[in-house]
Amino acid sequence: MIFDIDISDLIKKLLKKEFRQAKWMDLISSILKPYKDVNNSFVEVSDDISYRMLFNGQTMYLRHYLNDKYDTILRRIWIENTANTNQVFFFNEDEGQLPPYLYDEAEPEALTDFTYIYDDTEPISVIDFIVWVPVDIVYDEVVMRAQIDQYRYASKIYLIQTF
Figure 1 (cartoon, one colour):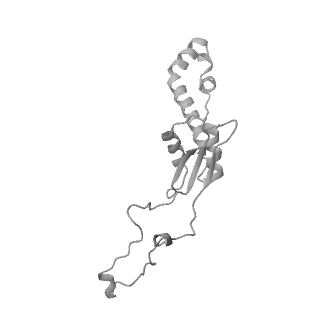
Figure 2 (cartoon, one colour):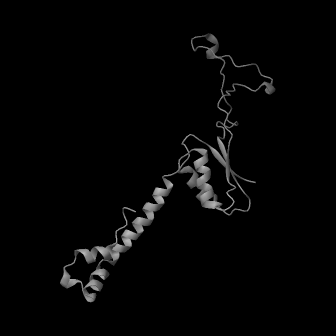
Figure 3 (cartoon, helix red, strand yellow):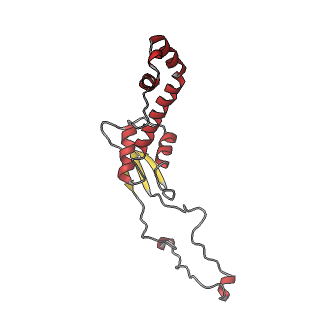
């Protein structure tokens, strides 16, 4: 990795020859110990960030990421796309209502009759995808939602279901 700096090797290369004795090397190494710790932590975080940057909101990448996190051997977590964006409903035929009449505000009926596109009791949105997780996988739903939210597109709504 480009960020992995070997501080012990760097000390040996930069010190003058007369200071390359064991007591001086130990003293300088102990002084630079916090820098070694910070560098090691940075390398670990940068490796994790590089791994997470491999994924995005596409279904196959999200599925791969979740299986890497929760089901590395059997890889049973899968994602079902449930959104049907081609349908727009203004009314339900089973309700026995006439189709709504959309009109201009200048027409006289506009002042007395209102047509609502949806009722407050009906859900406004449709679930876009379902993440199916096997029952025997132990997971924290809050953590899994945070991991999914990291990659999903902002307008997508999903459910986590077990099977």
